[in-house]
Image (cartoon, rainbow, N blue to C red; front, side, top):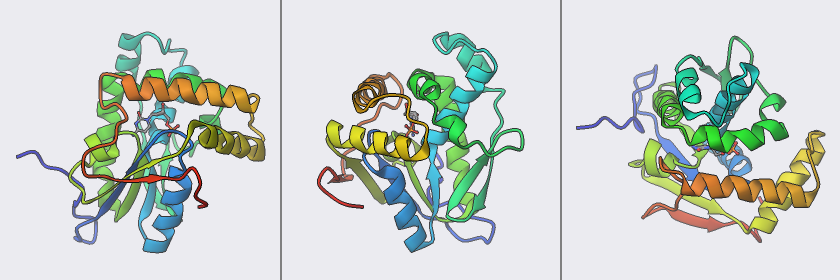
Length: 221
Ligand code: DC
């Protein structure tokens, strides 16, 4: 039988638990995951950051992100390590913990196409399935409830209207000083990514049967 790692033994020999949250960009997954994780003592895992790391590395190494074969071959060379830091499971590439370089308009534009490549998804999924060895986790993404940890009992689909999601993303980018365009441009880029993420061949974003759906359009954190 295939081993699912949502209750994998960690270093202390305990069975780790996994809370899985999927949903489109800007639905509030990161804020909710961080807050809930802090309250429960579950480490926050931002799986989107792993796809962004793959994308950032492709761009840094001059890989054409529309060339699926080149991206697939390159994916096998990317090494990511992780360790708990505060409330997060932090990711390191070549000894550096990347931050805002993963959130540029360029990475935003290339991340969805890179995330369609099966070799990229397989590598990121393998990294994610090993992470419960660090402890209890709250993992957010697009395929966590459907593909990465489909058997975990705590599965959520967090969504919100496109307008609310775009407004939140734009506000976040302005606050961080990394705004790449107007609110309308942010919305267009977010909808373009949603379209790719939910129609791709491998592990598309979808609401799985049996998940708890929360629409955060009119909800505060
Ligand atoms: O959540 P985010 O915007 O940081 O995600 C970046 C990209 O990675 C986005 O195009 C969706 C994709 N992604 C994915 O395909 N599967 C995941 N589990 C998480 C993110």
